[in-house]
Length: 598
Image (tube, rainbow, N blue to C red; front, side, top):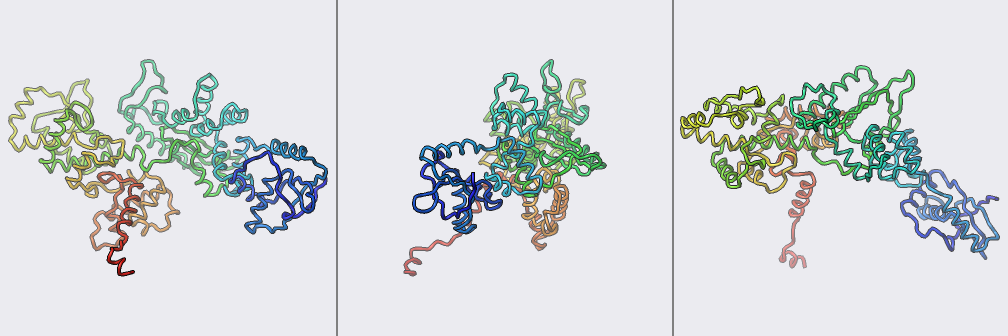
């Protein structure tokens, strides 16, 4: 075979090609690859009667070259290496084209994943790798996630035992979880990719996951009679996550004393391919994964690879992630719900008429606001009962409940079998009371005291119906809050408890909206922890800002997240409202104005 060089404008497309369709995105990728590294494989051609050459094989390369010529990236007479075949029949031409399409097979996904990871780890960009491979940047992102799988899964992917969709779903689990799922699959269990995502992202917090001393947990458990730790679950998830978070922070502080770096990742997926094992004598760092399920994984002795920041951000999520990150996580929604419920409770205490209306509605429906058929305190009270910092709304309600319980002679149940009460509000509603003694105590109340008791009991049971969902509709709770003119700015300030639960990109947006950026300067220079502290100081400093204070202080005083409104407002709803307002603000020509213009 002799390779010769001819010019691009001498080439003609093939008269027949077994490849009947071409991926436009892939063609773009191939053109980018040729522009970067040149044509790495020659074309096969045959002379045309008269002038020029017909392509036998290499139409995709020819079309990519033509695309570059049309854009002016290469000249029309760009030199092209070719193998000229002079005596080919039509059948020979079709055979060669078919063989080339079969032989030019794409790399297996697992090999692509590790090849892409190696290039990215050496500092290449996604666009560079995509161009060299002749694929899209999205394909590179999807493939490179597979490089974080455990070795056992990689082998099965290479052998075709694990489909690509299942492999992508497995990236959401730790290596131990991946091995456990694979073991069950090999035992005959039938899981598809969606099943595996549900298993790995819907894991319940079990005793086996806890890294804190179990004696610190004061709640109850759910377990089968003969269950082991992996099948014994915490009932109080809020308490579990609080204790687990504290233990993770202590663990991180311990490692910070000796490790080159410590990173705490709060995601189900960690791009482990961005790290390598430290060599002998090389300082290593630690990555602590605190997954949303509560599972903690610690990997020590790691060194960060030279990955571009943009690549790190673009590949931070696994392709198997079931859905985009919600604007507010479950714990944040619950915290917001509790704050709002307490604020409305406190407002009800000051508005007997509205409280009686609430009571009448509840009596007519036959259940209280949490859906139970007996009188229970709203869960917002328990949410803050043991909190280190309690909102003023809670202390106001607890003080009122304590005075009422004392007036009625109600004391905490001293029975050895009774659960400890978390406040005077719980004593009023749950303590064991002898009916006649209580009746006599109530008889001794004045009309005003009885009115206040009814008001208090109504307020204690009223709040947002579902504390684990944003109440962004026309609910009774939101309507009553609006009628009471409850403004959360008077009851709550953005603090570390709220800010630490926001993503860094969300904190940057808060800094701009609240005027904090005026004091903070370059936001990219802040770690998430430092940004939380700076924002908390800003909101504390500006809470009493006067109307003539600087604009950034007034923004800090007035800033309130959409979730704290009645009803809650999400980012998408806020953008839609802004668009509608702009549309309404546009001037509309009247008939007279049009006539005048004519």
